[in-house]
Length: 439
Image (tube, rainbow, N blue to C red):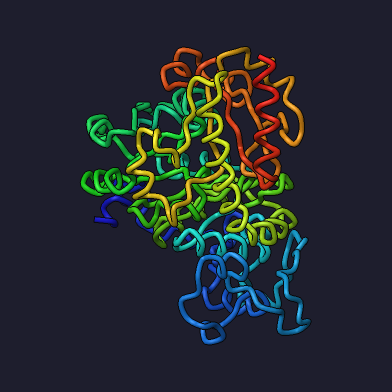
């Protein structure tokens, strides 16, 4: 079934191995491939043998170490920053024997991050690119062509909605924006030319959930690939590949970075075949992450578990407060008993964690709230960071959506999205209370 899904998605565009040219044609013109063993041997300073580790370590241990060990030559505990465009070859006969020739194709620092992200997401491998939107674009470019159809959630990140409408539709691709809260809607939207099912769970910014097991089962039944944008969840809350998805998208800018330092995105593949396809697309497009950014994210992601637990606990406390405030008409957070999909949230989310994102509908002027709220709240875009961020989505993150579409999915003019950081939740509540009381 998997092989037929891949074949259908790629429309049988090629029967030759995708990776044959990855380290060659797109960088130097040669058709010689890099032996897998050579890539492994080059990572001697970056990764450890399985025998060096106790078996079955937890995600918290993997997110810190992820196979990285001190360099054999220097003892350096961190993966070095390989700020090199090109890599010297010992001879023509040994071209690519060490696995690297040009950093657009592969860079040792970036590769370490890609392997670590794949490990945490429980995938085969991943590509790390410049932004989350770059990961989204890479996915659609990899698995859709002119005349192909995608069933996509009707409430997604605004940039995802825009690129589908503004770039891919004019290229002859079709997109049906469907309510994914009921898997039957997804199946009903499938056409003979459907190549991709694109879910997002929880959705940005409405926090609706998709039943990933049910949707993956539908995708498998019809031989279609299922990709899930799991940026809001992070692997600590939900790993889509564990629920049958074929690919996962992460905006690494958010919780992986978590410190408002860098931008990045990842597309994680469940199988070697899918990885080879997305790696080829990345290489051809030159869609890469800089080694310095990869180095920083290798460090910042180590505290992701600590941050997610604190942010989840604080978000629950803040959501409970907002539910009782007279200036608030509605509060949505997957941890609240009032969330319409609470049963699914408890079943699909890991370890009772529901993340640091929530939203509420304010009765007064949202612009006045934005302009009057005091620190520690920060008025800006982005989310998932240690700093708590408040956003008026209608005029900020989702301003590019058609108003009719925005209202249809519940993003009202008074819709306020908050990303809870790691500050004292009581301070955050005092700040919200003070600003709301001024409306």
